[in-house]
Length: 420
Picture 1 (tube, rainbow, N blue to C red):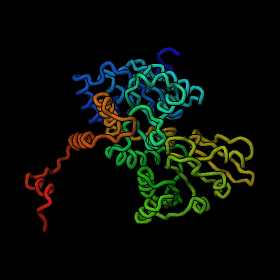
Picture 2: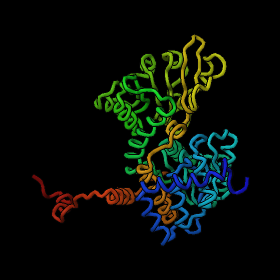
Picture 3: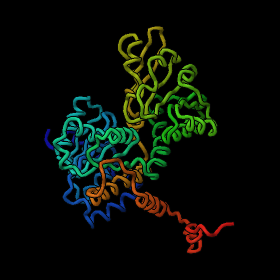
Picture 4: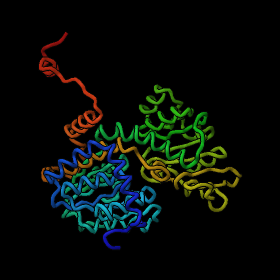
């Protein structure tokens, strides 16, 4: 590999048009990029980013480069890359990019290695693959690294586990913790894009179907809301009693997955955990069931377990639909090889939502560069002032005004002496 490994550099013009289309829906990131171009807060900083290579990510990359960063980008999922975008990043924006849609695991980790060969000062992850690889296999890089940022729930879970074990060797900002990220990206972005991916892959009518959502975190809330909006009868499977109670109060059926598989038509996991739909679930699942995942890794669905009870190899019945026939004759359809269906068969979150998520990434990177010397080796939330500023800019871009507190109101809220 030279300074890139992509499918076809001749796709660049088409990628450019789509990047520019997305940029129109990303006013917060655009405003940050304009400031970065003037101030260069990332000048001289080597950055390695492992993110979904999409039109929205391309606009984040433009922003980081505008800030002076020496950036290398690699894909955070083998099926999420948009090949025309990767071509535009290399050929037009001159960002070294290692990403090919459908790459195998060997190529995926070669690309991770290529991004780490850049010897980054700052890592930017979606799923913590850079950080975990550094700590396991590339520890010689630790001396140069001042910190990192993490985009998604799954990655934050991994990083907090590392910190709890005393293994994390540099500070990381959990971008996913920002309210302007998980309130909107996870709920509205995942909700819409997952439904989009399932429909594109299958072209099934959701109305009247029993739609099983595994997990009722922010992603699960958004997915359940959008599935119900399409007319589906939504069932939630949960392990957390508070989240399960919330799902009940929101009007959904709640039951164990083992009960849900007996009546479900469509299943989607959004938990961040392993084997949420397991072999014993597949044994009880109805003929014709459709199973998808919108969590970061494909481990949420035990596909090897399904293969162990199937006859022969799966049949590719549609793009992104693999049909397994069990030994008792039932057909079970796995979407997108169990990977993120919203990026495997669709285009991921709408740009308007990713505008806030990637604004958090850009500002978190700036914050890390400015404050790394005073930060401990642990996982930090995005500072509240960054969260509030992103919300303020987003409202302004939408033409929405809000009230401000009067001096009297501020004084009242900060006083213990005044009451009824």
